[in-house]
Amino acid sequence: QDEKVALFIIFGGSGDLARRKLYPSLFRLYQKGYLQKHFAVIGTARRPWSNDYYQQIVFDSLASLNPDAEQAKEFASHFYYQSHDVTNTEHYVVLRELAQKLDTQYQLAGNRIFYMAMSPRFFGTIAGHLKSEDVLDDRGFNRLVIEKPFGHDFASAQVLNEDIRASFAENQIYRIDHYLGKEMVQNISAIRFGNNIIESLWNNRYIDNIQITLSEALGVEERGGYYENSGALRDMVQNHISQIATLLAMEPPVSFDAADIRSEKIKVLRSLHIGTPEEARQDFVRGQYGAATVAGEALDNYRDAAQVAPESKTETFVAGKMTFENYRWAGVPFYIRTGKRLAKKATRVDVVFKQLPMNIFQSVNKQDNLAENVLTIYIEPTEGFTLQLNAKRVGQGFATRPAALTFRHSSEAATNTPEAYERLLLDILNGDSTNFTHWDELAQTWRFADVIEKVWASEPAPDFPNYLSGSMGPACADELLARDGRHWVYDP
Ligand code: BG6
Image 1 (cartoon, helix red, strand yellow):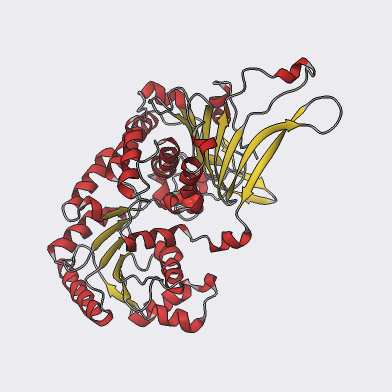
Image 2: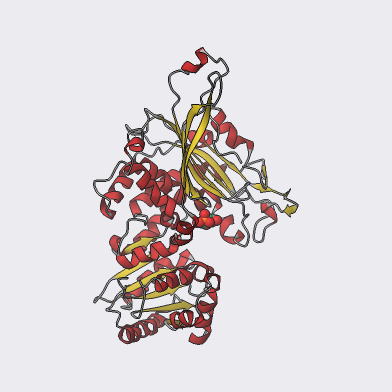
C-alpha cells in the first residue's frame, strides 16, 4: 500500500471513542500497510499516565481483532502520552515540543491530524490554542477532526464554527458523521448513479414515499448524562438521518469528487422544508421507552437509567416527515424514524414506488392484489439490497405474488468491510472530505431541527413513557403514516 505519513494528536486519548474505535481502526490501517514506519500518535487527556501505561491501553484495545502480539506491540510503540489541560497555554508549548521531536524521529514531514474526541465544550479552546501556540506545522498539512455533537442548536453550532474557523480553514476541517463511513451508506450513490433502471425512476413521478429507519435495540446505557440534554432528534435526526436523506435526495453530481458532491448536497438541503411550529406539531412525533420484559429479560424505563431525571421529558424516539421542495421531490414524503430500545437493531431505507394505474389481473381474479414495488437498502446489520417485484404465482389460474431480488454481501466481503472509522481515518489521511459534513449542511439541518426542538421544549410530552421496550415505538408513529394512507414497510 501507499504509505501515509502523519502525526495524530488525539484529544481524549484515554476515552471511550479512542479505545473502542480509533485505536482499532488505526491498527487495521497499519495491518494493511497504509500506516507503516512514518506515523506517530500523541494521546492527551488530563490524567497522568506514562507512555508505557498508554501503550498497554492501546495494545489492549486491539484485543477483539485477535492481532499478532508482536505486530500489535510494534504498532503500540508509536503511541505517546501527554497529560494535558486543554485550558492551560503552557501545556500546548509542551505538546508542540513533543510533536516536533516525534516529527523528526519518525520523519513526519510536518503532517498533523488533530482529533477532537472529547467534550465538545473544549473544541473552540483547543483549536484556538493550537494556532496561537504554533502547534500547527506549516511544512505539511494540518487537519482538524471533530466529533459530534457539533453544537446544540443552530446558534451554538454557529458560535462553535466561528471559533474553529478562526484557526482552521473550512477545507482543513473534517466533521465526522460516522454514518457517512458506512459501506452501505456509501453504496446509496452506487445504487443510484450506477443503475439506469433506478436513477430513471428516482423522482416524484415513480416514487410514492421513502422511509428511513435507524432502529436500535439498546437503551441509553451509560450515556444518560449526554443523552438527557440531547434526545433522539439531536442525537440521530439532525445528523445521521439528515445525511442519509440528503444522499437519497441530491441531484447527480457533475463528478464524484468531494467538491461536486458537496455542492449537490448543499443545494438539495436548501430545498429541505423548514416547517412552521404548527407543521412540526403535525409532522413529528416523539416517544420515550418504558420498562418491559423482552425475551425473559427485564428492561428498565429510560427514566431509571443513570444520570436521567426521574421525570425526564427527553425523547428516545422520533418519527417524522421530511420534505424536499424541488422539482424532483415535491409531493414525496421522506418518513424517518429512530429510537432506542426498539425491537431490533436495523438501519435501512425503504423506497416505495407508486402503484400501477390499475391491476388488470383483477379482471380474471377479483382477489388479486399487487404488492408495492419496494427497493430496500439494508445498511446494518444486514448489508445489501432487495427489490420487491410482482410475479405470477405458480399454478392454475392467475394470481400474483411478491418476488424479491436480493443482493447480500458475501460473508467474506462483509468481514473485509472496513469499519466506518477506518474508512474515514483513511479519507482524512488522503485529504478526501467527501464523507464529512460541511458547515453549510450542518447549518441547514440545525435550522430544520430547531423548529421541532423549540415546539417540543415549550410543550413537554404529557404521556412519557409512551412505548414499551422491545416494540417499534409509540402508536403515534404508525398514525403519522396511516393519516397519509401509508404504513411502515419495516415492521418486525
Ligand atoms: C451515535 C449516537 O451517533 O450513533 C448513539 O450518539 C447511537 O446514540 C449511535 O447509538 C448509533 O451508531 P451505529 O453505528 O451503532 O448505528
